[in-house]
Length: 103
Image (cartoon, rainbow, N blue to C red; front, side, top):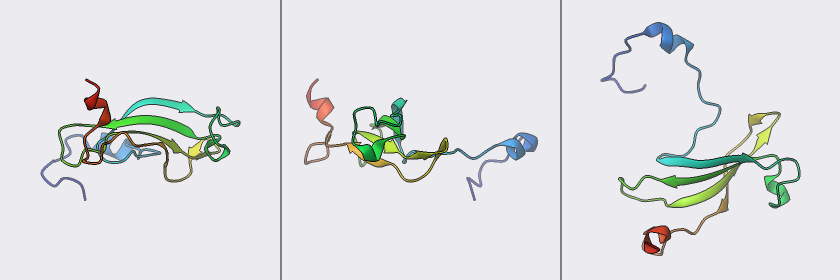
């Protein structure tokens, strides 16, 4: 479990660490986080009450995943399921970022 090359130096801090409530996908860098509210904030009803995240991936890894907007469902103030894609399609057919084409 974990990286075996790293030795914990302050075990009392490790014991107090809490797991995150929600984890983004690998190499996902969040840009914006907003909550859609009960009415969905102009989005389809299935996104109502969810956490809307705009994210992009780093560019220093193979398999660039581009930019996307996702909705993480929230119930009673806690994440309640896997994120659903709201907006995608920022990559070309060959996997390059469309945003890079605009530069």
